[in-house]
Amino acid sequence: MEGNWSASCCGTGSVSMGARAHLKPVMDGGDVIESYQRLLKFSNSMLAHARKDDWAALIESEMVYVAEVEKLQNYEIDAMLDEGQQEQKLELLEQLLEQDKEIRERLLARRQELEKLISSASQKKKVEDAYLSS
Image (cartoon, rainbow, N blue to C red; front, side, top):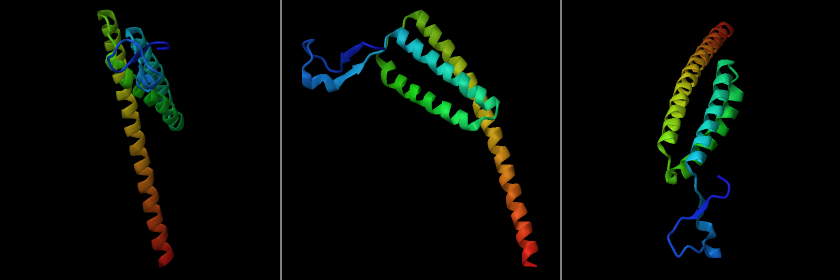
């Protein structure tokens, strides 16, 4: 994505110094695929952390993942993908969705574990309080 910049408004082709604020990076099809490949790499890392129950590392990886998603959302709109790149993008999206599903399932299971622990601790406290008050 380095070096590919365009003016966000139409004009004579020249860009004045005041117009520099309106420049934005433009992704080509290759940049888009590279970005989706980075997303898949981050997703692989997140899934590995979830499988190891390393929730702190999962959250850190997710922050990087979200930043890449936001960057992609901002710049992919103007990108033109050829048929092969569209196929690649579709395959990458399918992998991302599969991994996202497993991560969400593991997070849901973890939430249920935590709910049980909280409930158990709450019940224990009630029993202790009842015992101490009698």
